[in-house]
Structures are given as structure tokens and as C-alpha cells.
Length: 253
Image 1 (cartoon, rainbow, N blue to C red):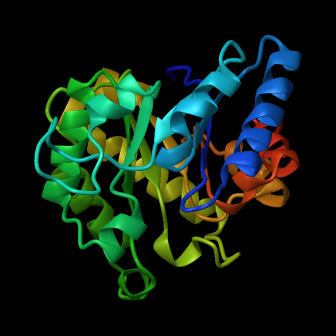
Image 2: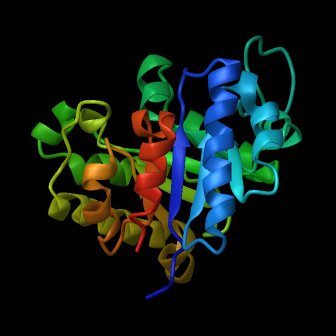
């Protein structure tokens, strides 16, 4: 088995004014720096208003900074959007694309997500590509089919284990406190890894980090992170509290 270094990623979503956001970033940075040689990577994805300042705050600590979305174009007449090149320029090394909230609230298709991921790779960023089924799709028995389709349509050419992370989000579990069973999580993660073989080849697929993104918290993180094909978490609400975010990271095997 290829050794995959766990990634604990915090998606702050539309949360964080300057004082609170910088205090949170500083606390996470302090803890990671104090730990020294950690067995995991940490990533925070603040709102774009805070990216540059958060980057300065965590500099030298080992905490990486990412954006929550990017446009597929490098520049142009796209009011309110931000490009992958701009994120890189602001200090990001990662960007989330295709989050279920973007797919739902903004109607983003797999093709749009793929174009954004390709833009991220071109800008030198690591793309965190989100996939996952809704409750209706799950209840209809389409979990694997939906994830297969989204992988096929969302992963861009040129993706590798070094420049891509997959985040599996069972949409029905985000922020609800509901989670699939450990067996169900492992089944989907193993399926995702197997589907990646067709996109990037067996060697790269074995090395791609597949994160779990459905209400991971300190109480369930240890069991989830112990699953063979779970390589970290994309954390929402729990990433807004330094104690909870750090407690999840400490559950990494």
C-alpha cells in the first residue's frame, strides 16, 4: 500500500471577520508549530477577504492556506470572481472546487468543476475536488453511480497524486450531524480510488488522498481516519473552533 500523508483541511465557508479569523489561524499555527514533526498536513481555507492576512499569520508554521473556489479563466470580465492565479498570488497552495454548496447553490456542473480544477493545476495549486451524492440519490441506490459520474466528469487532464485531492461529501451528512456507517464510508472511498485508476493510472490512484467531508468531528474522527482509504477530512463547522480542529488532527494514525 502506498503511504499517504493525512490532510486535515478546514473549510471556513462564509465565516470569519478579520479579528476572529486571524485569531483562529494564529491558534492553529501555534499548535502545529509546537508539535514539530507532525504525521499529518493541515490546511485552512478562509474566505477570500482573509487569505493574504491568514497566510502571513500562519507563515512558517507548516499550515497551508487555500481558497474556497476559483474561476476557470485566468482573468477577465467576471465581476465578483477570483482566479486560481490570484489565489496563488495571495499565498494559496490549495483551492477547493466543486463543493456541494457550489454545485447546488450555483448550479455548477461536472464540466465547470473540471475547468476550475484545470485552472488550479495550471496556476500551480493543488485542487481539492469535491464529489458526493444527495440524500435522494442515496435513497435511490445511486451512491456509487453518482460518484463514478462526478469523478469521470470533474477530474482534469494532468491530475496526479501530487496536485489533486478528492473530497467525498455525502451531501446529506454535511452539517446535519448524520454520518454514514464506517463500512459505508470505506466502501465509497475504496470505490473512488478504484475509479481514479481510469483517470490517472494505478500508481497515481494509489497515492491520491481521498478526504471524508461529511460532518467529521472530534467524536467520530478517530474511527473515520482509521479506515484504509480515508486520508483525512474536509472539515466545515468543526474547523471554526481551534480545539475541535486540532482534536481531529490528533486522531490521525
